[in-house]
Amino acid sequence: MKCPRCGAELVVDSHRKYDVMMCYDCGWMEGRDLGENITEKKITNFERLHNMSFNETVAFLANHLKVSETAVSTWLDSCVC
Image (cartoon, rainbow, N blue to C red; front, side):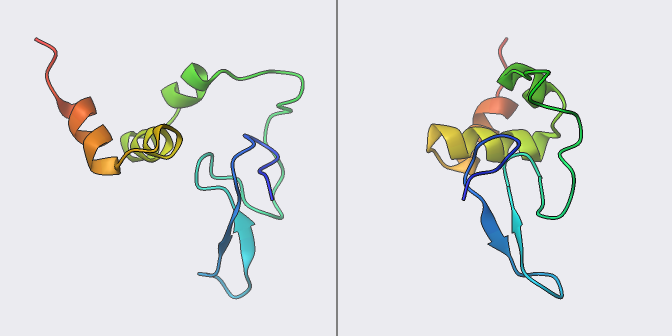
C-alpha cells in the first residue's frame, strides 16, 4: 500500500495497542489527516528535506538512494572545506 502523502511504501507499525499503517519517510500514520492539502500545494523534495531533522533526512536519503544510513550520515557530516 502506498502513502497518500508522499507515495512511499507503508509499513505495519505494531508498537501500539493495535496495528496501524505508517510511512517512515514522511511520518504519516493511518487514521490521521494529511495535514496540509498536498494536492493543491505541491511540495518539492527540497522543501520536504528543509523541514526534516537530521535523522529523518538521513533515513529519507538512504531509503531513496538505496545506500546505508551510515554512509549518508558520514557524507552529511563531512567537511566541505
